[in-house]
Amino acid sequence: MLPQSSSLERAASPTTNRLQASLGVVSLIALVAGAYAMHATPGAGAPASLSLLLGGALGIAFECGRFCFFCIFRNLIERRPMAVVT
Image (cartoon, rainbow, N blue to C red; front, side, top):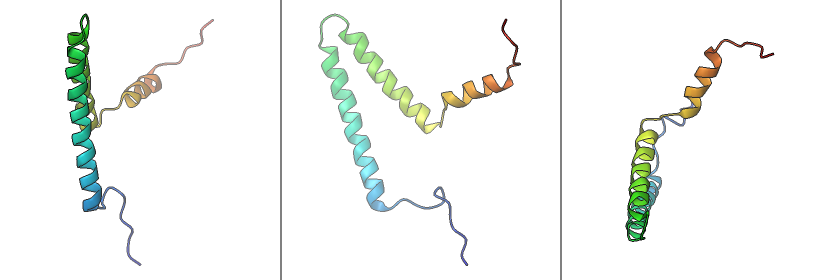
């Protein structure tokens, strides 16, 4: 009997890779177009467009780095000494 490979060991199909790449490009174009449209809004348009672009960049960086807020807070809660509040 052959050992089963995990999902991490299996290579994605070429169709899946193309779909992911095209969705990424469409998302990037939508992000830039939204920031450009926001920038033209009088008032808070420029800060809002900058926030959108920085948020997108941080989201991509956190996703690629596998950054997890849940794990950070879980570790904080698990290591904290429990005290009864009266």
